[in-house]
Amino acid sequence: MERLRTVLLVTGIVGSPLLILAYWLTYPAYGQLHANGVAGAIAASPGMTRVADAFGLAGTLLAVPWALAYVNLIGDRSRRLALLGAGLSALGWMALIGVFTIDAVAIELAYHPVLFARVYADSFVVALNAIAGLHIVGAVVLGLAVTRSGLVPRWVGIALVVAAPVHLVANLAGLLVIDAITWIVTAAVGIVLLQRAGTGTVHREYPTPILGQRSG
Image (cartoon, rainbow, N blue to C red; front, side):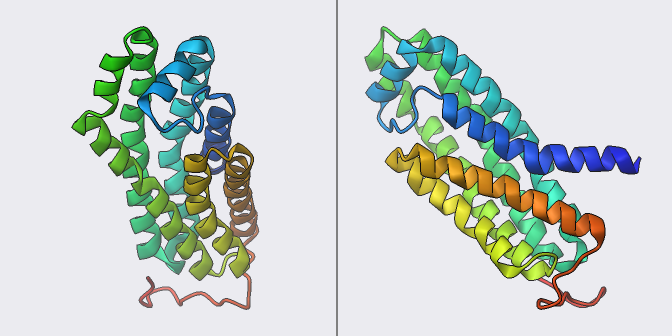
């Protein structure tokens, strides 16, 4: 049972960010913000779009165990922050599943750009994108929880805090290299946290709350 738990933790906390990295590296419409650009890029590479979406869907589904892994590893050291971050993150990632369907619509409407633009600007799609943004907020909160947990040096938690908003800015600006680095950092933070939690190592400079004490 302990081995299964370890596999699930590693799969979620490391696999999810690496699969999302693979999604962005293979997504033809990366950096495209407008309907015409998205439709044109996807229409030119529908096969690669489907490959990218497969990576994205797998990474998104694993984002729930990713978030739960942080709650599990942080434990009572900063449980409320971890739960809040995990909840926001999971909600945002689940909304992204709906956003992925826009790629399928773009493939089918490749020769109907006006119709695709109407779907792309639909209020429901806009709402999904807004809710999806919660995964950024959730990652920041989880980073704060990691920072407060004392399981790792403070800079490791800060790296997770910074990675999410930097990903957002880089993504909107079309800066793929910087965006890719943020996902590598996210996976690396997970690996460090797994190692520290697995060995029982606590970074003594940042003591953790006593069990039963109030912790945020």
